[in-house]
Image (cartoon, rainbow, N blue to C red):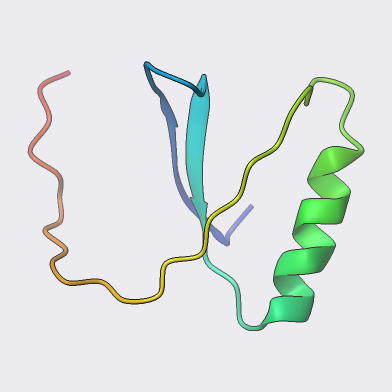
Length: 63
């Protein structure tokens, strides 16, 4: 999906995190409702970024 900028396996409370870039709240709501219908999705938590204070790309992560 073109609006997903990254998907990552993570430690802690969640197994996977992803960033979905949306144009408006209705688009986000439609995406969240769609992803909830996917059989593999057991639980969904979302957050909205209000302001980015620093973004450095590409990320400095060893693979």
